Length: 109
Image 1 (cartoon, rainbow, N blue to C red):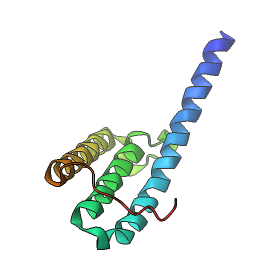
Image 2: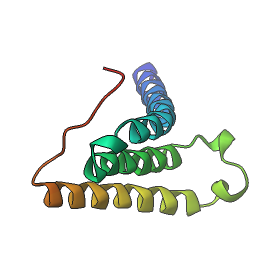
Image 3: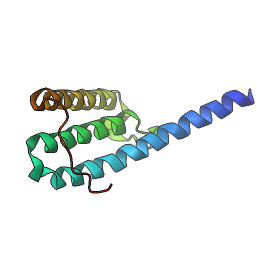
């Protein structure tokens, strides 16, 4: 039985870590959007897609103690899934229109 508690604890920790990284991803995608506007719309659209993906992951993995008001119901799952679908659609459009993924300027690397 101790094994199951350990596995549950590891999965909960992984969930919170992914949620925290998604929060950081929201801020990072906004900064990188403005850093890549000069390279063209396709490159900037990549970071629009990462913003929507980060919002979707944040909503899907939102911890219950932080889900107050509107986010207590199932609407956060619907909004998170819709945001993730928008991100995939934007990246698909960018990929098809640019003939691949465009070069991006990652100021953090």
